[in-house]
Length: 412
Image (cartoon, rainbow, N blue to C red; front, side, top):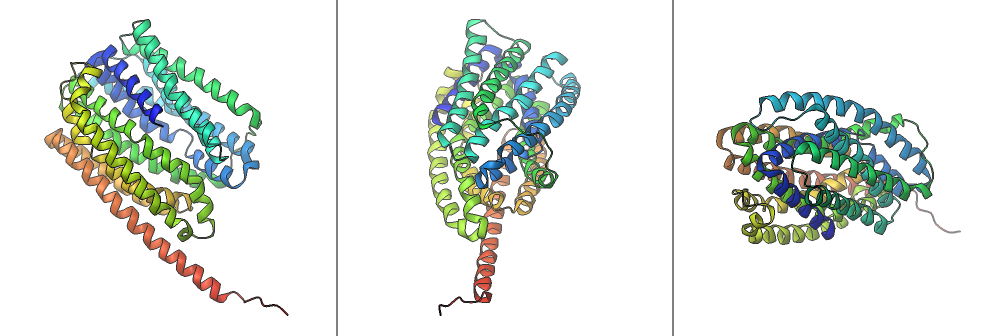
């Protein structure tokens, strides 16, 4: 996971230096939209894939086919809609223009192909093959770094249009590699699992809301500051987002175990979630402190034109700790099948948070943006743990009542 994070940072550095603040700022804004779209792509079917494989590996073919069908259907709609939306958005912005072919390549590569690539990690995690899952994650990060290095450093790519072609081609190649890795497991069996659609929609809605909240600042700052400032802020956000990898990796590894342990009651998995909280907080504090101390050296890596980068990274570094604080509780709610509660917390916070962040940005960008970001994540911490502890008490009480009501078996 550390190597994957480092590879992503190197990739961002190469792109930031090669594209320059203006073109990279435009890339950041488009990436903000694709980050939302990728959560919609597949309609949350990856959750039933992870849960289903962890409980019944024999369901692989049917679950994979279900995922691929939904990715194909939803991905086509998202590419068409995304190109239309961003064509209109780019015309009202202050940055360079972008053609429809470039937008189509960016949406195809960053939404549909990336969602297919992520299936490889999900399959291996569900089957308990952690090393193979890690290989998929690290391989994808290294693949993107190699594509950026070849395109920008060897072939001198310096425009977003050229990079869109390189990125889409690289993601397509890695998706084919992922298909080869999965081929020994058998062919997919194409069918839509209607019973899983509601759960999948609830699952993806949480991440759509989180993606909107996580990227609304990038779009809003573009309306109230220069595109060069968007470039610096976008680099800082990319750095912070990459720093979540260790925490996300920890929770992804624990998710199948949480699903198994909570099968007979959510309270059975609560001790694991509490231990995960301690580990995640330790990772968050260490990562945030490291970024804060190293922030002054970042312009040398990403480019001297990114003048505001150290300030932005210092302001955002503490948010990693808050993400670590609520991640374990949210994951246990999902793994135990309480997607309704999880969706209520995340969707409510993300919906209201997006409004708060946009309003704060419009009034006092970027300081207002930072204050709003911390307030929203702090609210999620409180809501997630209060809900989880309440459900755990209820689960424990129901288990005790069931034990008292069950007849006691005695010998002759």
